[in-house]
Length: 285
Image 1: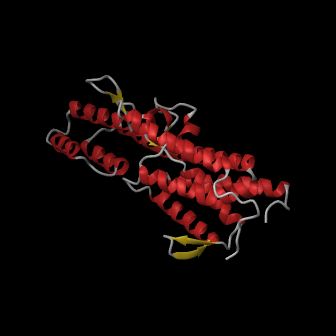
Image 2: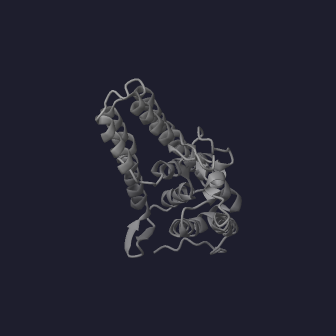
Image 3: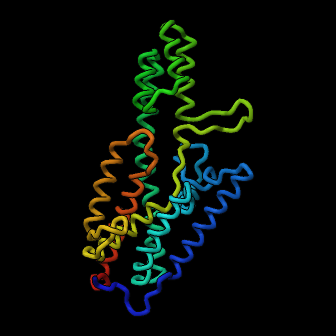
């Protein structure tokens, strides 16, 4: 196998090292604040722009938040594995720019897909309010929620016993409204989250950008899937793109992976690499 490491190669270059430290500190802070009943994801995770919880800084800070130990472990392993090679080749400034652009691009692509999906739900709710029936309620729940909770099913069956009930129709509208927009907790007065308040955390978009760059620059370099099966980088990336598109368009209920954020990170990586390559064709090798 060709050794990609040039003379002076650093196993843990400056930007990669600092990113690892920052991510770990944010991860520890998340659990420290959780002990004080403060959810840092509400403040630093990325929310849809129509959410009451959205703040502009979340476009950056969400990259340093992670859901659990396995989430941060795999992301940081990818950062070290691919980021070290790229930073040694590009230098700290160019690598830092690349990493942040991929992360921001992933966030923008994810929010664009959210706008498409969430507005479809919102438009369906507006149409439902004009024809609120038990059957229409069931169809809405199955299509946009994906499952029917026991309490919701009991309510719908009760409604079927009195299908002309205005009270049941209004309550169904309240249930859907709170599913989309959330509402105020009756006891605490605190806002409880709805669909628009879904939070996205993690550096995966930026990491996928690094992986794409590695495969773009070193297409025939072998990557070992599960540390056992050798696959050329170009085929590994192709597989990730195809699987990401399939999973993203399937949009299965319960799938909490932001597939289009991953693809967005790769898209912005491709765009930035093309721009850099066009400006200096002798730079890449």
